[in-house]
Image 1 (cartoon, rainbow, N blue to C red):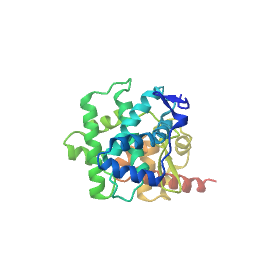
Image 2 (tube, rainbow, N blue to C red; image 1 turned 135 degrees about the horizontal axis):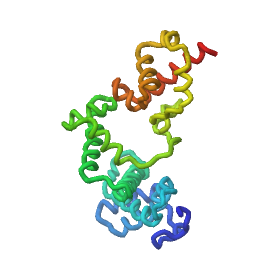
Image 3 (spheres, rainbow, N blue to C red; image 1 turned 30 degrees about the horizontal axis):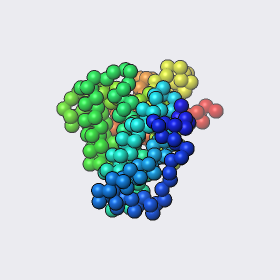
Image 4 (cartoon, rainbow, N blue to C red; image 1 turned 45 degrees about the vertical axis):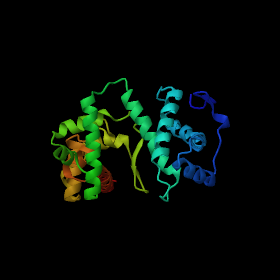
Amino acid sequence: MINKVEICGVNTAKLPVLSNKEKEELFVKIKNGDNEAREKFIQGNLRLVLSVIQRFNGRGESVDDLFQVGCVGLIKAIDNFDITLNVQFSTYAVPMIIGEIRRYLRDNNPIRVSRSIRDLAYKALQVKEKLSKQNQKEPTIEEIAKELGVPKEEVAVSLDAIQDPLSLQEPVYNDGSESIYVMDQVKDMKNTDELWAENITIAEAMKKLNNREKVIVNKRFFDGRTQMEVADEIGISQAQVSRLEKSAIDRIKKMYH
């Protein structure tokens, strides 16, 4: 239970809270090799670890184990934090703590993933990040596979294998005006929009769409592709596919209402 008071022998109700000034002063001492200051800084940021592990509640994992792993992430963040940057420590530390916990969950997943698949997935993620920065857009599976020199199917399988289970209602993208959820990325042969689309006058409806919208509607509702697959095939982001798909459906619906 995440709300238990004592975790790993630590009374979470009595954890200290450091002011920004105290953090700055302690960090100067830490960089000068003061272990006592380092320990005090760790204790003063354990609440940060507690707030992060709340996100992983309900997975059946021991809260004590998650807390310990989160503390490893916190310590890594302390050791790597650059005090010359104009960034709050918590802003830097939270992703480090989350990353450490996710690695732990992947490595301890009851569905075992082979080392070779994990290695390929991590290489693919590195290439994805490199290409994203280089081209200022998210690369396709084909582009990642080409860079690695392996079949695209192997890249797709490896990336799928290291993903944590998610709720279908989990948001995966938000542009400030609308969200894309996991359910938008999966196939559903009982989807009401698909059944509706199969029963309209196709020829007339499709005339009202531009070429890209026609391609997306055909692939999504008649070829059974997911939004991610369509995005990969036509070389745009999944967010763009979602927007174009919804726009096309709304336009067609208006013709028949």
